[in-house]
Structures are given as structure tokens and as C-alpha cells.
Image 1 (tube, helix red, strand yellow):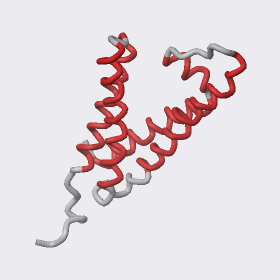
Image 2: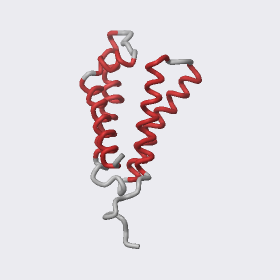
Image 3: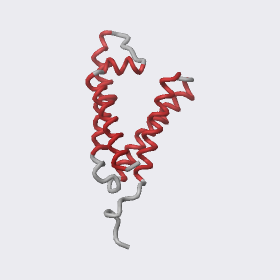
Image 4: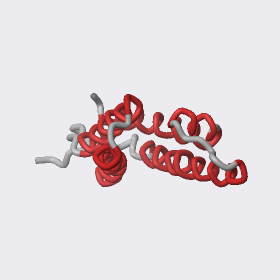
Amino acid sequence: MNPRITTAVIGVVTVGLGLSGLFYPDRVMGMLGFAVLNPAHAAAALGEVRATYGGLFVAMGVYTLLAVPDPVAQRGRLLFIGFLWLGACAGRLVGISVDGNPGVPGWVGVIFELIVGGTLVLTSFAKGSAANRPPA
């Protein structure tokens, strides 16, 4: 797949996930299986979801989208974002080894993060177009 298209798709998906976390934190919590145990702490819990699954993902997605015009020149940026996704995947795998089988949603998360992170890492090593290559 074309590095620009790959980068754009991943950037849009990441921004979309972030906007969901930012504007619908209660739905994101429900999807992830989280619940507020103490109503007195609801604002803090929703704020945490907005920060982590909202703001952080929006910033990561925008940063990815900024690499779309020339992914070859933005290798470091794409590699960094790919490793963020792979780090999340590694964190899930540590959780699985410590806490046990997370069920289908947990494994879907592992696969999704592995695919997105791996794709960005591979995209960061893509060759540039002929126009971007220096003369021989």
C-alpha cells in the first residue's frame, strides 16, 4: 500500500478514536468494560478517559496526519508513533501474562495495536518516490 494512504488512514482512525474518547468518555468506558465505582469520583474518571483516550489519541493522530504529505521525510515521526502503538500492545501482553486471559475484547486490542503499530513501523522504512530520491 502507498505510504501516504497508509499514514492517512491510520491518522484518521487514531483521531477518530481520540474524538470518541474526548466527547463520549462514558461510551468508551463501557466499550472497554470500565465502570465508575464511586459517583463522587465520576468527574475524575471521565476526565482520565478524556485525557488518555481522548486528548492523547487526538494528538497522536494529528501528529500522524502531519506526516502524510511526505512520509519518507517523516520516518522518525512515524517510527515513534508506531512504537507508541507497539508499546500499548506490549503493555496488554504483560497484563495478559500477569492477570490472565482478557477474553475476546482484550485479544482484539492486542491484534489492532500490533497491526497499526507494525504498519507504521514498516511504513517508516518505505522507499521514497523517484522524485524524492537524490540523483545517482
